Image (tube, rainbow over all chains, first blue to last red; front, side):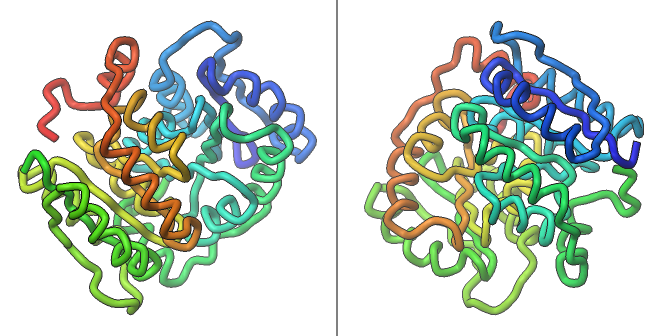
Length: 149
Length: 149
């Protein structure tokens, strides 16, 4: 579980999800692929919910979500107090999302980012520790007291 | 209220907030400036809460939030079911946030976007209507049945 990433996308993020699954496995993560499994139109909130449930039930420590822009996924995922979903666009924002916001869900825009830039986001995100300190005080203000996920 | 934007930023978004207030007024919006009022270090969730409260109490129809990357603000704001906070990076994502996600809070990264690009985001965001249709079904899945804000 500690090294498992729950991954899901809607039709706008499907191609990017396909490109990123091997990358995640190559980085040593277990992957829980929660769909979607084609380019057929689906509703992104259903897939954000699936990832949230997997994290809240302890089946995954991390989440990765993709839709067209990443905006809808980040709205839906952040409804869950144990999830800190960061819409990220490059190595810098991937790094800061971990260092400052202790993000546990990486959100990417499948129609915004190319696959190589998305791979860089993943590498940076999953290798950067949270800095704690004043950032922990801020994160605590909108997160559960005892973060399960 | 219909044309009022509640605006807030932390120290990382303060300069951008200062640059954007005249722009909002020039577009004809009333502005509720909820701080911060200097570059002194503050906690971004306090400012996301202030905007959420203003919107939930009907003092503003829209929100605008800025922190360093926009990531922390978008996490904190989206804890509120009536808020749909979109972290936006350019005219395209500003447009799609309105058309597809019916975003009512625009979130910008003060250390990521320059002021002219941010002004373009504002112009596009506040002039683009929601498309409804299949997007309304999706938005309803993570929003209140009767959206107050």
